[in-house]
Length: 344
Figure 1 (cartoon, rainbow, N blue to C red):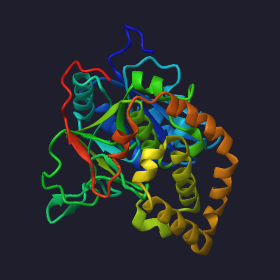
Figure 2 (cartoon, rainbow, N blue to C red):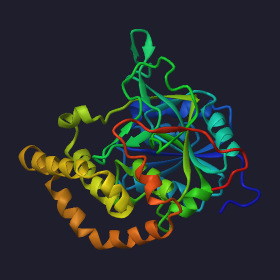
Figure 3 (cartoon, helix red, strand yellow):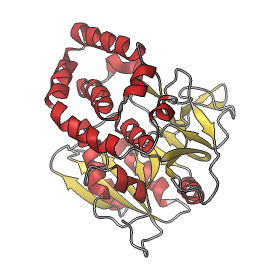
Figure 4 (cartoon, helix red, strand yellow):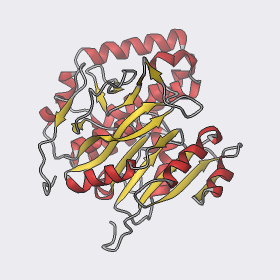
């Protein structure tokens, strides 16, 4: 729990792995924030210049001897830290100068919201905004779940014509650039494990968002907070992605539901999720052999996830029907009804 004298500076947590192509631009944008912040970089055994770049910018650097993954890296950065808010930030993101200030303002105005994220726009490898017919392309305005238990970034690939200009309550937010409230993290963690380390990487932001919703916390999308994001992982590019990425993507689909899904969501997702499961199984057997071990790993972890499920479901404060209503083939978002001073 943060002390009463906790620093007003936001803790910025970055996990790097072979990110020299992007990290300098990312850290420069953090350094240029109008709101005070301090930076911790956990480097997962990079062999490029990532560590030196972090040092050059004065970040507090932890140099791991092995790749512990995205989840574990952020958990290490957050442990034993005194903060009110922490920004989880990907190295391939460039923040507008007021990104932090706008998200902090939103969370202070609405105490019932535990996480905040802005409008992420697509960026190319050179750091420039990607345009279509003169309009920036949207990367994310929050995440949503479909009844097939897939999660997507709302607005991804659309031209930004002002269609997402209202602050809204969304299911959750991408882990590329999300501000988290310390008091929420205390409730959601399995001990020191805020992000589920069995995930290693991929879908951990959707999992955290789902757990937060179950606990009664909300996620706020703040459109005036803007950032650029270079997105490498897209469903349409699955055949071009590494075996490791696809392996964790398959594994984490099932780990996430083992602890978070209840009977109301199960009914809402029938039969779509199970048809999707069948399709995944056939696809992996025929075309993606590298992901076959993912099914064995889920089976191996089943007892551990029964325990995690007891923690998640035992602390929930939101009714099953309320959670199930968020699962839709159309992106779900709700206008802000909370008033300043409202508590979860």
